[in-house]
Length: 136
Image (tube, rainbow, N blue to C red):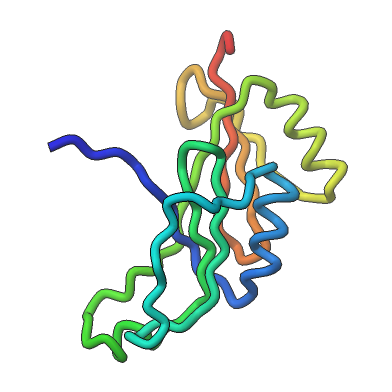
């Protein structure tokens, strides 16, 4: 069985703010193709924004801690996590963050040999990594 990453789902109290962040800061585009059809009357009626880097979708979903209860499911499929992006010009990206007033931690190669990594938060406290591979 072959698996391929399809999307990352993040939950938020403010879908519009998250959509603005991911499109404005990371330069992702609004996704319009291959979107799921939301069944808003079957347990989850929240708003969702869809963005993509052209290969992987992100679903920015309105937080709803009661969706699992309403659907009778133990697992509510909204988790926060670490997402990572690779760049070919980390210095330019750090300068971009600085002009936007976004603070970041520069880990250099302390965690992964050959990867220069920085980490920062989106408006809801989700961690984002941007890294550059040596020689890239």
